Length: 152
Image (cartoon, rainbow, N blue to C red; front, side, top):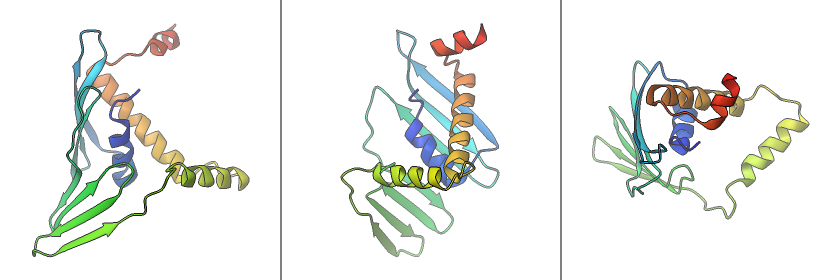
């Protein structure tokens, strides 16, 4: 289920659940979705996601705002963020490269289990990601074999 999962994860983590979603997909001859786009509306902001299984983009993630824009390199494992302010100033943020990017997630997961914390931001974010993904699937007609089993 790769319906822009990295992009949707980043979107949900930053902005939460959108008020409205508009989605479209490009299907391959075998019926699998090959690429698509999602517009997520939040009332005061809008996000556009473009994803593909059949092409690779070299474009960075970009967040635009009234005071400038942020260029985020290598989402979801961010290496560098460059902020271009409207006044012409630039700020660069570098992030440490980790050999195994799952270490922090594993440590947090273990801590949450030990502390018996079920309701956590990670869980809420995952629920939002699934809500977005389900709506994209509904709008684009993406059906998995397991969906048919569940309907029986």
